[in-house]
Amino acid sequence: MSTILVINGPNLNLLGQRETHIYGSQTLEDINAGLQTQAEKAGLDIDFVQSNAEHEIVEHIHQAGKKKVGLIIINAASLTHTSIALRDALLGVKIPFIEVHISNVYSREEFRKHSYLSDIAAGCIVGLGVQGYELALQAAIRQLTSSKNQD
Ligand code: DQA
Image 1 (tube, rainbow, N blue to C red):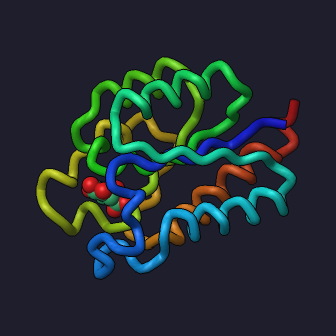
Image 2 (image 1 turned 120 degrees about the vertical axis):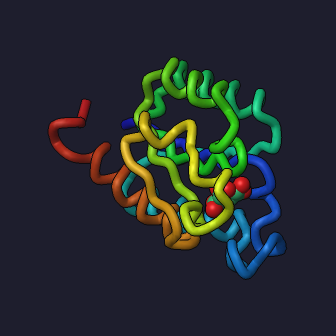
């Protein structure tokens, strides 16, 4: 049975206190607890990492390539708009990933409209609040448990 890895990038450790009018009042711990329950119900393993450092996220992606990670759910936060290193790491490990953004990045500043990840993602969920993580996990569960994907 493969594992799902949820990666959160810079400043998402501040969820619940950071710009709550944009990102809501749930903490990352609240969100991850909900995802843990959702994954357990589906009989899948799930791991969580958050880092404020680009090189640490690159390392986590490399480690995922060595472990049995079947799918990555990633909110790369600001690194979405800047990081060729993250793009290359995701391409390098060839693990399908779903890109999540809590806010609607297309209705905000111009610089948030470009993502280094979207064109190589299996799918993108933006602007649906923290529910985006649940929806991404629902899609991941469906992909990993459908009969043609089972090992
Ligand atoms: C974000 C959007 C990014 O532009 C921003 O830098 C974040 C959070 C989101 O989830 O809406 O930190 O990824």
